[in-house]
Length: 93
Image 1 (spheres, rainbow, N blue to C red):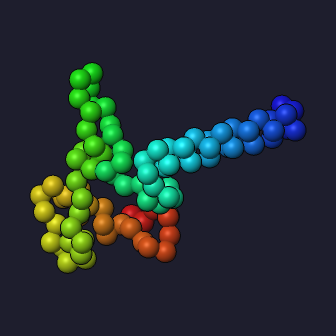
Image 2 (image 1 turned 180 degrees about the vertical axis):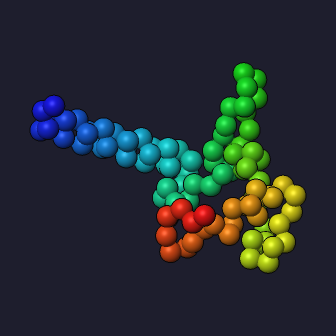
């Protein structure tokens, strides 16, 4: 492996990726990637159906994880919520 050659290729790939992201953000009429929401992303479900990600991944009501008031569509969060830690990405079993 020739590191200087790879370094230049990685740099060019990174620059092209950032340019493509900028073009997508601008095409959506947004100012910054942080403005992208599930309403801006589509998912092909099959050969003839495309859905907004917002309709594929249901939103959790604000505060519902804090007071154990989780509706049926979000029971998966109740199974894993006790394993998360806001201060760490480490797995908490």
